Image 1 (cartoon, rainbow, N blue to C red):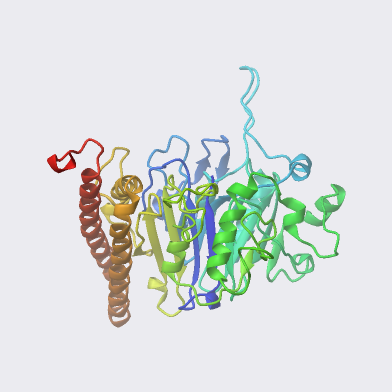
Image 2 (cartoon, rainbow, N blue to C red):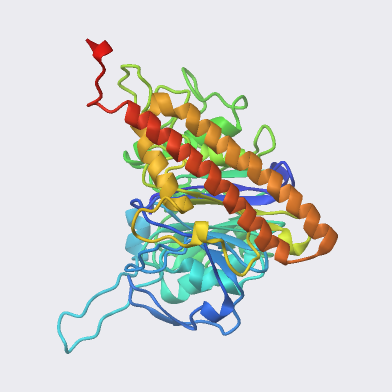
Length: 487
């Protein structure tokens, strides 16, 4: 699935938290935010896409999930935080090359040609990963190791990147072919920027096959590279992107421009991003996977960058200018996003309130981000009770409506959108601060449900007010309007 991911190490964030976030860019997928309690977690899992059956451990813990409301193609849990305060977002669809996929083909489901034969199950994929991994891990590194073992055993039918975080670490895993994988711990002072392309550009093989402190991979990765002549590096430095990734023309309009815009945001002065002798341009293949940001990163920074559509550049699709570059690159905040979640794990509060899930539905360019406590047994109806039919009584459909109306009336709506985005995040942070203090004083777990209900009540009020304003603005600009003063 075409998405964009950001990971933030704890020393790169303003409050010493780790954060991972991803735009889940399906095709206008209808999403909701729920809590999966242990009794509701399956013990035998069957994938709808690959028809693979897997027995699951009998000791799951609760976790949040943003599944598809229409489950005809599976759960597609997308992201979540578990009771151990471990976050996971899955997946970022990535690219590979024929040398890798020829050496270790993807594991595709094969339907039997006749009744005498049996179907051949495929491997695991985005539909499955959160459900198979998140309920069973206690740290981010545990997540890498569990997912890695599943990839080696069952294989995968697609190339994916997956992020994990706990209160101390962020990890990034990328699948390689059908059964291989590679993972690296994000340095504490770094931010990772990931479009839909193989990302890792540095890796310590000695550590991966030695102490395994910051680098992990499938057990036979060295032999796999050597036996299949995959190493295209010629300077003695192992760059996984050159070995396992792609450098196609489509990358230069679909992927690298997003990395360029994100890098430009986090490092505006360290590198030259435009003009002659630029260090990087929108079609550069060597934009770093990770950067040390020039200032500490906040939740609103992540929301802004994952909502962006090349504002401030000639590539902005909403500019009025007659510019041939307008809209030539794939935006980060694209129209079809179903859900975006910022999974924040804080180390300065008690365990029960460490985990915050900032949830956004619909196109990020026009929606807002609502923080909610993750360690609860149930989410409020405003984010969890979502149906297939449009209904402005929930956060998902209200934001879909706001986005569709504001997009077609961008010039007259954008100020309303900016006020909406600020109002939800401002009031949301105020309520979180209020209930952090209340919980620290009382240790009353019921306060978390009370806080989430209060947050959703606020979001419903502000969102409804914004929808009313955006609808009125769109109505006033309908093409069949007429006034006697028009003559």
